[in-house]
Structure formats: structure tokens, C-alpha cells
Length: 408
Image 1: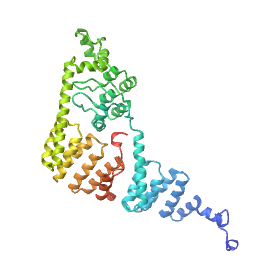
Image 2: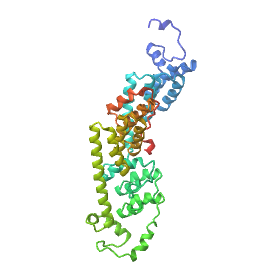
Image 3: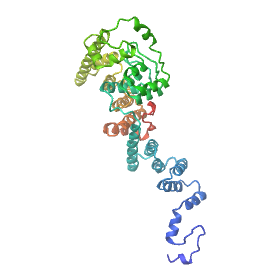
Image 4: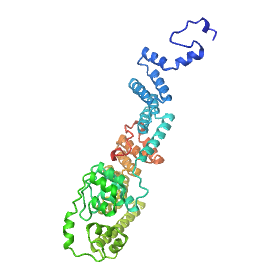
């Protein structure tokens, strides 16, 4: 303080006092002067970016962040501050992940990465179709339907396409998702009906509009209309028209008639479906029994039978992948694990199986990526987190992509 009266004033500092000098040093003008003097000084850029972040100037902070990382791509703090200056949770998690690869013992980066990963997951789920109101049978197939966004026109059990299943459940969110993924609005199965017919039978006006906008053909049931006048009416159906028949089949009374064999073809199908379900439960039980007995080779057979009979079941390839892994057969374990991921892309266990398979094949980078994919689906899973780090996760080049593949 004693030197101020005898020190020459700096013209750029408007208030020549200790507080005024400190205020100027921390100001934007001073930092811009410093950057102008040495534009390669990443530390100055980093501190200026911190100031912009605290002033909620996200765009300016991001510009400094990009310049700072370009100058010092091996500096963990550059990525840490880069993650702090964006409100995009995915990008923040990705930035922290990059910093963590450079310094995987950095506790601050670890905590930030976990927190942003959690927020990113919540953010993804905010746009996810609300499934709380959907019936149990739809939820049973929902994992298959999600994977079907990659193959939206696959028919399940010769009856349902993913789009028809969504219509049956009354979920316009899933209908829009599948149409966006390329689902055919006119696709009908040999033993089922087209999505538009199903929506019309259930009176789902908004879904009907959505299907028509996507190119659904309202005349697809023309052949049925032609045959109706020359077909003997069924006494229990009061309205002998296409819409009337569909409405009756979906009614409670119609379902009872199916159960009591008044519709032999449908009843026969339901009986066959029940027997198949019983057989699958028996085979799975047999497989579990053999696994518990340590007979992994023997357990492969019943699980193979389940996969052949019910190719949309994800539990069977997961269990068979486990058996292959116990037999140290990496190729078999990986093939079943990848099949499991296709069927249930939101299931952490599927990615764990893939990680174990890649470890057997000694591809540790892909193993770390698989464990990471599973961990981000359930950040409370300590086994997946431990597997990720033990497989060399800090060196993984996996990016935080979430359900982008499925269009969310």
C-alpha cells in the first residue's frame, strides 16, 4: 500500500488502488490483454473460460475450451473445465471421460464423470416413451421391440410386427419412434392384421392420423370387405362388418369366445403358445440345474433348444454365453452376448457377458467398452464398474453415446 502513491499509474487500470488493481487483473480486458501477449498460453485461456462459466456465458466458455484443448490436449484440467462449461450432460460426461483417461486417479474427475453420467441418463429417460400405462404382455416384448428399431419390420411369432404391437398397446410414442426408424405402416403378418386396421378396431384416432401421415393404405382391407357379404355371419357377432368383427375380437366377450374354442384357429394358436411356454420354462430350469451342478457343456443343449424355439428370448443366449465363458470358448460366448444385446439393448447383463467374452479373446479395449456400455445403463452396478476399471477402462476410447442408436 505504501508504494502506490509513488508508483507510476498503469493507464489501462482505471482505479489505481489495491482493490482496483485486483479487480482489473480478474477482468475480461486484462485476460484478453494477456492472451494477446501470449496466445499460446493455455493456462490464461483456461482461467478466462472459468470466468465465462461463472458469468453463465456458455458459448464464450466453450470457444476458450476448444482453444485450450487444442493447445494442451494432454492436460486433464482442460477437459475438466470443458465439462463444467456445458449444459449438455452427454458432452460433459464425455469431456470428463477424456480427462479421466489422462489421469484416472483424479478423484475430482471421477466424481464429476459419475455425476454427469447420471444426469445424462436421466436426461435420456426424460424423452423416453412413458411405459407405465402399458400392459404386462407388451412390456414382456418391449426389449425385443426396442432392438427392432434397427429391424423395424421383423415379424414376431408370425403375428406381431413391432408397429402393430405398439398400436395394440395404444402407445403413440412408440408408434412415432418405429415409423421414424423405418417401420412399414402397411406391414401385416400372415396371422395378424395391419397396424391401421388394429388402430381402427380400437378407435385410436391419434394413432390412425399418425399412420395415415406415414403412408398407411386405408384400402388395405378391401379384399376382406369384398368377402364379407358372401361369408356366413357368426351369430355371436352383432355387427357383421370389418370394424365390427375387429371390435368384437378385441372385446372381453370375444376373448372369452376364443378361450372356449368358438374361434378354433385362434384357440389352437393360444394352446400351442401355452405348450411352447411350458416347454421353454422346463428347458430353462434344466439348464439352470446343470449350471448349478457345474456341467456347463451339458447346459448348452437346453439353452440351444430354447433359442431355436423362441429366438426373441434374451435370457437363453445370456445363459449360454455364460456357459461358453466357463468353458473358455470366447467366440461362442461373444456370439451369444451380441445376440443378447440385439434382443435387449437396455439390459446391463448383456453388455457384461460381451465384456467377459472380449476378455477371453484378449481384446481388452473392446471389453472395457462393453463393460462401460452396461455400467452407464445402471450406474449403481458395482460389479460392472469394477469390471470396467479392471479391464483398463481409463484407456478406453468409448464415447458416451447412450440410446442414440435407437433414435432417442
